[in-house]
Length: 219
Image (tube, rainbow, N blue to C red):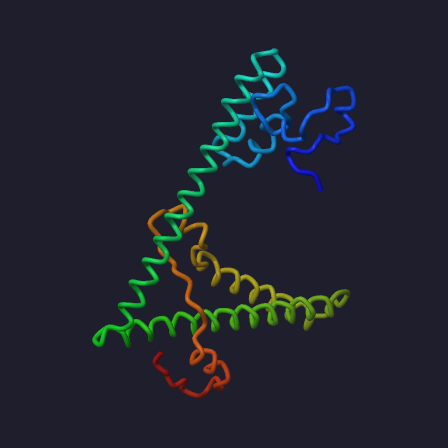
């Protein structure tokens, strides 16, 4: 492995005077590779116009050194701001977690908050189970329809009509019932969804039979 100060080993530079490989990363050097890779990593809001500007500069023989320097600094500043925003978000998340932890220690409200977290986890497991059950029923309907293929008697026709009605009713029941995704919440703005790790007590509830009343265990 060679470093930026080692001699360049590129075959395309065979006709050039010996030079360090790092000059290809220097926007002020004539052998600079260009900011193409950095620009492709930019957010979509600025990526396309920045790349278009670079292509126009190359096509129309602008002062490439000046354009490269401007785009290079633009990309570095955007990446710096992205890192800064990410650090702020991490700090905010830590603050939220710390506030939740302090609230859970409250003698008056702590038990309620812990119970709501347990409920959220338990409901998420129920949703997963219901969705798996739905897949089983849909598979059964599909298998029955396939088994009726080629049959034209009244009984088969009546069964096919009944299965079609079940499918329509299932689709109607589920229409508009999906909860917003995390991406939906982020687009809406000001949504806070601190992740909650599965609680040991809640995990134990999954072994309780359906007809049994789960006993809540506080954290």
